[in-house]
Length: 360
Image (cartoon, rainbow, N blue to C red; front, side, top):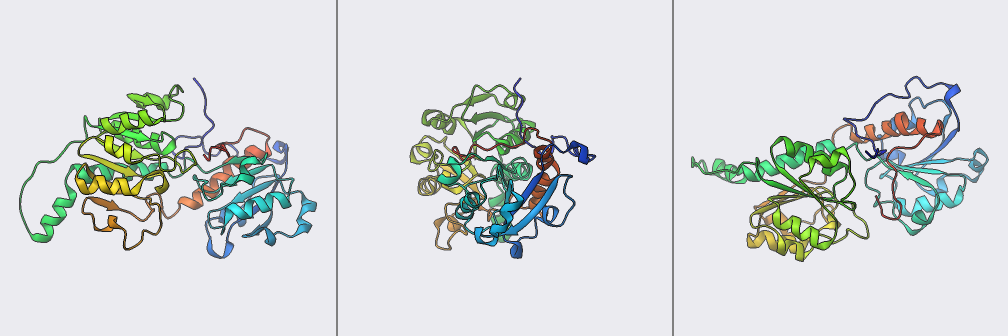
Protein backbone atom coordinates (compact mmCIF):
# COMPACT_ATOMS: atom_id res chain seq x y z
CA UNK A 1 0.00 0.00 0.00
CA UNK A 2 1.27 3.49 -0.88
CA UNK A 3 1.91 5.82 2.04
CA UNK A 4 0.85 9.42 1.54
CA UNK A 5 2.60 12.19 3.43
CA UNK A 6 -0.49 14.22 4.24
CA UNK A 7 -1.61 15.53 7.59
CA UNK A 8 -5.02 14.84 9.07
CA UNK A 9 -5.95 16.52 12.33
CA UNK A 10 -7.98 13.58 13.59
CA UNK A 11 -5.85 10.67 12.42
CA UNK A 12 -2.20 11.74 12.22
CA UNK A 13 0.28 11.32 15.04
CA UNK A 14 0.61 14.48 17.15
CA UNK A 15 3.62 15.54 19.21
CA UNK A 16 6.24 13.37 17.53
CA UNK A 17 8.81 16.15 17.99
CA UNK A 18 7.76 17.36 21.44
CA UNK A 19 11.02 16.10 22.97
CA UNK A 20 13.22 17.41 20.18
CA UNK A 21 16.66 18.69 21.31
CA UNK A 22 19.56 20.61 19.76
CA UNK A 23 21.21 17.27 19.01
CA UNK A 24 18.39 16.52 16.54
CA UNK A 25 19.08 19.63 14.46
CA UNK A 26 20.36 18.79 10.97
CA UNK A 27 19.56 22.15 9.38
CA UNK A 28 18.63 25.53 10.85
CA UNK A 29 15.36 27.16 9.80
CA UNK A 30 15.47 30.94 9.29
CA UNK A 31 11.86 32.00 8.82
CA UNK A 32 10.21 34.97 7.12
CA UNK A 33 6.53 35.41 7.99
CA UNK A 34 4.54 37.00 5.16
CA UNK A 35 1.25 38.20 6.63
CA UNK A 36 -0.58 41.27 7.90
CA UNK A 37 0.44 41.37 11.58
CA UNK A 38 -1.92 44.29 12.27
CA UNK A 39 -4.95 42.29 11.15
CA UNK A 40 -4.05 38.66 11.89
CA UNK A 41 -3.70 37.20 15.37
CA UNK A 42 -3.73 33.58 14.22
CA UNK A 43 0.06 33.30 13.97
CA UNK A 44 0.78 33.58 17.69
CA UNK A 45 2.45 30.16 17.78
CA UNK A 46 5.00 31.38 15.22
CA UNK A 47 5.36 35.02 16.20
CA UNK A 48 5.29 34.68 19.99
CA UNK A 49 5.47 30.96 20.80
CA UNK A 50 8.38 28.66 21.51
CA UNK A 51 9.89 27.43 18.28
CA UNK A 52 11.68 24.08 17.90
CA UNK A 53 15.44 23.98 18.45
CA UNK A 54 17.19 25.24 15.33
CA UNK A 55 14.34 27.58 14.27
CA UNK A 56 14.51 31.38 14.25
CA UNK A 57 11.85 33.88 13.21
CA UNK A 58 13.90 36.38 11.22
CA UNK A 59 11.25 38.95 10.32
CA UNK A 60 7.53 39.62 9.83
CA UNK A 61 6.03 41.74 7.04
CA UNK A 62 3.15 42.03 4.60
CA UNK A 63 5.12 43.22 1.56
CA UNK A 64 8.50 42.31 0.14
CA UNK A 65 9.65 45.85 0.92
CA UNK A 66 9.03 45.23 4.63
CA UNK A 67 11.95 42.80 4.66
CA UNK A 68 15.21 44.76 4.71
CA UNK A 69 18.06 43.78 2.41
CA UNK A 70 20.29 43.40 5.46
CA UNK A 71 18.36 40.22 6.32
CA UNK A 72 20.17 38.48 3.46
CA UNK A 73 23.12 38.03 5.81
CA UNK A 74 21.01 35.62 7.88
CA UNK A 75 20.24 33.52 4.80
CA UNK A 76 16.50 32.98 5.39
CA UNK A 77 15.43 29.63 3.98
CA UNK A 78 11.73 29.34 4.95
CA UNK A 79 8.71 31.52 4.14
CA UNK A 80 5.46 31.13 6.06
CA UNK A 81 2.67 32.87 4.13
CA UNK A 82 -0.81 33.68 5.41
CA UNK A 83 -3.98 34.54 3.45
CA UNK A 84 -3.99 37.81 5.44
CA UNK A 85 -1.12 39.03 3.25
CA UNK A 86 -2.54 41.49 0.69
CA UNK A 87 -1.76 40.50 -2.89
CA UNK A 88 0.21 37.49 -1.73
CA UNK A 89 0.59 36.17 -5.28
CA UNK A 90 2.58 39.33 -6.05
CA UNK A 91 4.46 39.66 -2.78
CA UNK A 92 5.64 36.05 -2.56
CA UNK A 93 7.51 36.00 -5.93
CA UNK A 94 9.09 39.34 -5.02
CA UNK A 95 10.23 37.91 -1.69
CA UNK A 96 11.62 34.78 -3.37
CA UNK A 97 13.58 36.94 -5.78
CA UNK A 98 14.88 39.10 -2.94
CA UNK A 99 15.98 36.09 -0.86
CA UNK A 100 17.26 33.35 -3.19
CA UNK A 101 18.31 31.27 -0.17
CA UNK A 102 14.65 30.30 0.48
CA UNK A 103 14.12 26.55 0.06
CA UNK A 104 10.61 26.05 1.44
CA UNK A 105 7.32 27.95 1.34
CA UNK A 106 4.48 26.92 3.64
CA UNK A 107 0.91 28.22 3.19
CA UNK A 108 -1.17 28.66 6.34
CA UNK A 109 -4.28 27.62 4.39
CA UNK A 110 -5.22 24.48 2.47
CA UNK A 111 -6.09 26.34 -0.73
CA UNK A 112 -3.21 28.08 -2.48
CA UNK A 113 -5.23 29.90 -5.17
CA UNK A 114 -4.37 33.20 -3.43
CA UNK A 115 -0.68 32.43 -4.09
CA UNK A 116 -0.59 30.86 -7.54
CA UNK A 117 1.64 32.64 -10.06
CA UNK A 118 3.90 31.75 -12.96
CA UNK A 119 6.91 32.81 -10.88
CA UNK A 120 5.97 30.44 -8.06
CA UNK A 121 5.20 27.48 -10.32
CA UNK A 122 8.54 27.93 -12.11
CA UNK A 123 10.54 28.25 -8.91
CA UNK A 124 12.56 25.43 -7.37
CA UNK A 125 11.25 25.90 -3.81
CA UNK A 126 9.39 23.13 -2.02
CA UNK A 127 5.83 24.09 -1.13
CA UNK A 128 3.48 22.69 1.52
CA UNK A 129 0.09 23.71 2.91
CA UNK A 130 -2.26 23.18 5.85
CA UNK A 131 -4.32 20.45 4.22
CA UNK A 132 -6.06 18.22 6.75
CA UNK A 133 -6.81 20.97 9.29
CA UNK A 134 -10.23 22.02 8.02
CA UNK A 135 -11.86 18.91 6.59
CA UNK A 136 -13.83 17.53 9.54
CA UNK A 137 -15.95 20.64 10.08
CA UNK A 138 -16.75 20.82 6.36
CA UNK A 139 -17.74 17.14 6.41
CA UNK A 140 -20.12 17.82 9.30
CA UNK A 141 -21.65 20.67 7.32
CA UNK A 142 -22.03 18.45 4.25
CA UNK A 143 -24.12 15.94 6.19
CA UNK A 144 -26.16 18.74 7.75
CA UNK A 145 -26.85 20.11 4.27
CA UNK A 146 -27.89 16.69 2.96
CA UNK A 147 -30.26 16.29 5.90
CA UNK A 148 -31.56 19.84 5.43
CA UNK A 149 -33.07 18.81 2.11
CA UNK A 150 -33.77 15.14 2.90
CA UNK A 151 -35.84 15.99 5.97
CA UNK A 152 -37.56 18.99 4.40
CA UNK A 153 -36.24 21.66 6.74
CA UNK A 154 -37.17 24.53 4.38
CA UNK A 155 -40.79 23.31 4.45
CA UNK A 156 -40.70 22.88 8.22
CA UNK A 157 -39.51 26.47 8.59
CA UNK A 158 -42.31 27.74 6.34
CA UNK A 159 -44.91 25.73 8.27
CA UNK A 160 -43.63 27.03 11.59
CA UNK A 161 -43.83 30.65 10.43
CA UNK A 162 -47.40 30.01 9.19
CA UNK A 163 -48.29 27.95 12.30
CA UNK A 164 -49.36 25.06 10.08
CA UNK A 165 -49.45 21.45 11.35
CA UNK A 166 -49.19 19.33 8.20
CA UNK A 167 -47.38 16.02 7.93
CA UNK A 168 -45.37 15.09 4.85
CA UNK A 169 -43.03 12.35 3.66
CA UNK A 170 -39.27 12.79 4.10
CA UNK A 171 -36.25 11.07 2.56
CA UNK A 172 -33.65 8.81 4.12
CA UNK A 173 -29.97 9.29 3.37
CA UNK A 174 -29.43 5.56 3.84
CA UNK A 175 -29.18 3.88 0.46
CA UNK A 176 -28.70 7.13 -1.46
CA UNK A 177 -25.67 7.80 -3.65
CA UNK A 178 -23.23 10.56 -2.82
CA UNK A 179 -20.98 11.75 -5.62
CA UNK A 180 -17.79 13.53 -4.58
CA UNK A 181 -16.08 15.79 -7.11
CA UNK A 182 -12.52 16.22 -5.85
CA UNK A 183 -11.61 13.30 -3.62
CA UNK A 184 -8.94 14.97 -1.53
CA UNK A 185 -8.86 15.40 2.23
CA UNK A 186 -12.25 17.14 2.36
CA UNK A 187 -13.82 14.57 0.05
CA UNK A 188 -12.50 11.70 2.15
CA UNK A 189 -13.76 13.30 5.37
CA UNK A 190 -17.23 13.64 3.81
CA UNK A 191 -17.11 10.04 2.55
CA UNK A 192 -16.32 8.72 6.03
CA UNK A 193 -19.43 10.33 7.51
CA UNK A 194 -21.64 9.49 4.53
CA UNK A 195 -20.61 5.85 4.79
CA UNK A 196 -21.79 5.79 8.42
CA UNK A 197 -25.17 7.02 7.17
CA UNK A 198 -25.29 4.03 4.81
CA UNK A 199 -24.72 5.97 1.60
CA UNK A 200 -23.04 4.68 -1.56
CA UNK A 201 -19.94 6.70 -2.50
CA UNK A 202 -18.90 7.57 -6.06
CA UNK A 203 -15.72 9.66 -6.21
CA UNK A 204 -14.05 11.63 -8.96
CA UNK A 205 -10.28 12.05 -8.72
CA UNK A 206 -7.25 12.73 -10.88
CA UNK A 207 -5.77 9.26 -10.33
CA UNK A 208 -8.61 6.73 -10.01
CA UNK A 209 -6.24 3.75 -9.89
CA UNK A 210 -4.45 4.91 -6.75
CA UNK A 211 -4.97 2.18 -4.16
CA UNK A 212 -5.12 3.37 -0.55
CA UNK A 213 -7.22 2.71 2.53
CA UNK A 214 -9.16 5.92 1.82
CA UNK A 215 -10.38 4.54 -1.51
CA UNK A 216 -11.93 1.60 0.34
CA UNK A 217 -14.64 4.03 1.44
CA UNK A 218 -15.68 4.38 -2.19
CA UNK A 219 -17.96 2.04 -4.08
CA UNK A 220 -16.80 3.54 -7.38
CA UNK A 221 -13.78 5.73 -8.23
CA UNK A 222 -13.82 7.57 -11.55
CA UNK A 223 -11.29 9.73 -13.40
CA UNK A 224 -11.70 13.49 -13.71
CA UNK A 225 -12.61 13.62 -17.40
CA UNK A 226 -15.89 15.14 -18.61
CA UNK A 227 -17.50 11.77 -19.32
CA UNK A 228 -16.80 10.59 -15.78
CA UNK A 229 -18.12 13.84 -14.29
CA UNK A 230 -21.36 13.56 -16.23
CA UNK A 231 -21.70 9.93 -15.16
CA UNK A 232 -21.27 10.92 -11.51
CA UNK A 233 -23.80 13.75 -11.89
CA UNK A 234 -26.34 11.42 -13.49
CA UNK A 235 -26.07 8.73 -10.80
CA UNK A 236 -25.76 10.77 -7.59
CA UNK A 237 -28.56 11.88 -5.30
CA UNK A 238 -26.21 14.25 -3.47
CA UNK A 239 -23.19 15.82 -5.16
CA UNK A 240 -20.40 17.30 -3.07
CA UNK A 241 -17.94 19.50 -4.94
CA UNK A 242 -14.72 19.85 -2.95
CA UNK A 243 -12.29 20.41 -5.82
CA UNK A 244 -9.65 23.16 -5.55
CA UNK A 245 -9.56 26.09 -7.95
CA UNK A 246 -6.91 25.45 -10.59
CA UNK A 247 -6.56 26.14 -14.29
CA UNK A 248 -7.89 22.63 -14.97
CA UNK A 249 -10.88 22.78 -12.58
CA UNK A 250 -12.25 26.28 -13.20
CA UNK A 251 -15.71 25.96 -14.71
CA UNK A 252 -15.42 22.17 -14.59
CA UNK A 253 -18.98 21.65 -13.29
CA UNK A 254 -20.52 23.29 -16.34
CA UNK A 255 -23.83 23.42 -18.19
CA UNK A 256 -23.30 19.95 -19.64
CA UNK A 257 -22.75 18.53 -16.17
CA UNK A 258 -25.94 20.12 -14.83
CA UNK A 259 -27.84 18.93 -17.91
CA UNK A 260 -26.72 15.39 -17.02
CA UNK A 261 -27.60 15.70 -13.34
CA UNK A 262 -30.04 13.21 -11.84
CA UNK A 263 -33.54 14.63 -11.35
CA UNK A 264 -34.13 15.92 -7.82
CA UNK A 265 -30.44 15.80 -6.88
CA UNK A 266 -28.90 18.15 -4.32
CA UNK A 267 -25.67 19.98 -5.11
CA UNK A 268 -23.17 21.07 -2.44
CA UNK A 269 -20.12 23.25 -3.08
CA UNK A 270 -17.48 23.25 -0.34
CA UNK A 271 -14.41 23.80 -2.51
CA UNK A 272 -14.14 26.94 -4.60
CA UNK A 273 -16.79 28.97 -6.40
CA UNK A 274 -14.85 29.20 -9.65
CA UNK A 275 -15.11 25.42 -10.15
CA UNK A 276 -18.85 25.74 -10.82
CA UNK A 277 -20.75 27.45 -13.63
CA UNK A 278 -23.13 29.44 -11.40
CA UNK A 279 -25.47 30.43 -14.23
CA UNK A 280 -25.97 26.80 -15.26
CA UNK A 281 -26.51 25.82 -11.62
CA UNK A 282 -29.09 28.57 -11.09
CA UNK A 283 -30.92 27.46 -14.23
CA UNK A 284 -31.05 23.88 -12.90
CA UNK A 285 -32.32 25.13 -9.52
CA UNK A 286 -35.03 27.32 -11.04
CA UNK A 287 -36.23 24.58 -13.40
CA UNK A 288 -36.50 22.03 -10.60
CA UNK A 289 -33.88 19.78 -12.16
CA UNK A 290 -31.96 20.25 -8.91
CA UNK A 291 -33.93 19.80 -5.71
CA UNK A 292 -31.63 22.22 -3.97
CA UNK A 293 -28.13 23.47 -3.37
CA UNK A 294 -26.01 24.17 -0.30
CA UNK A 295 -23.28 26.65 -1.10
CA UNK A 296 -20.41 27.78 1.08
CA UNK A 297 -18.32 29.26 -1.75
CA UNK A 298 -19.12 31.50 -4.71
CA UNK A 299 -17.49 33.02 -7.78
CA UNK A 300 -17.72 36.46 -6.19
CA UNK A 301 -17.36 36.86 -2.42
CA UNK A 302 -19.05 38.45 -0.58
CA UNK A 303 -22.05 37.33 -2.63
CA UNK A 304 -23.56 40.50 -4.20
CA UNK A 305 -27.01 41.49 -2.95
CA UNK A 306 -28.41 41.34 -6.49
CA UNK A 307 -27.30 37.74 -7.03
CA UNK A 308 -30.30 35.50 -7.80
CA UNK A 309 -29.15 32.86 -5.34
CA UNK A 310 -30.33 34.98 -2.39
CA UNK A 311 -33.92 34.76 -3.63
CA UNK A 312 -34.10 31.02 -4.34
CA UNK A 313 -35.91 29.15 -1.57
CA UNK A 314 -34.14 25.90 -2.46
CA UNK A 315 -30.66 27.28 -1.76
CA UNK A 316 -28.85 27.15 1.57
CA UNK A 317 -26.22 29.91 1.70
CA UNK A 318 -23.31 30.20 4.11
CA UNK A 319 -20.67 32.97 3.87
CA UNK A 320 -17.63 30.75 3.25
CA UNK A 321 -17.37 29.99 6.95
CA UNK A 322 -18.27 26.34 7.35
CA UNK A 323 -14.71 25.49 8.36
CA UNK A 324 -14.29 28.65 10.41
CA UNK A 325 -14.10 27.49 13.99
CA UNK A 326 -12.74 29.90 16.61
CA UNK A 327 -9.35 28.19 16.51
CA UNK A 328 -9.02 26.79 12.98
CA UNK A 329 -6.30 29.13 11.67
CA UNK A 330 -4.47 29.09 15.00
CA UNK A 331 -4.34 25.30 14.67
CA UNK A 332 -3.04 25.65 11.11
CA UNK A 333 -0.10 27.72 12.37
CA UNK A 334 0.50 25.24 15.19
CA UNK A 335 0.70 22.47 12.58
CA UNK A 336 3.51 24.38 10.86
CA UNK A 337 5.39 25.04 14.11
CA UNK A 338 4.91 21.68 15.81
CA UNK A 339 4.80 19.21 12.92
CA UNK A 340 6.32 20.44 9.66
CA UNK A 341 8.99 22.84 10.92
CA UNK A 342 10.69 20.12 13.03
CA UNK A 343 10.70 17.84 9.97
CA UNK A 344 12.55 20.51 7.98
CA UNK A 345 15.07 20.99 10.79
CA UNK A 346 15.60 17.24 11.11
CA UNK A 347 16.01 16.94 7.31
CA UNK A 348 12.95 14.68 7.05
CA UNK A 349 10.23 14.55 4.42
CA UNK A 350 7.72 17.38 4.82
CA UNK A 351 3.99 16.79 5.19
CA UNK A 352 1.43 18.13 2.70
CA UNK A 353 3.57 18.64 -0.42
CA UNK A 354 1.89 20.85 -3.02
CA UNK A 355 2.21 20.58 -6.77
CA UNK A 356 2.93 24.23 -7.62
CA UNK A 357 1.97 23.74 -11.26
CA UNK A 358 -1.28 21.85 -10.65
CA UNK A 359 -2.19 24.27 -7.85
CA UNK A 360 -2.86 21.76 -5.08
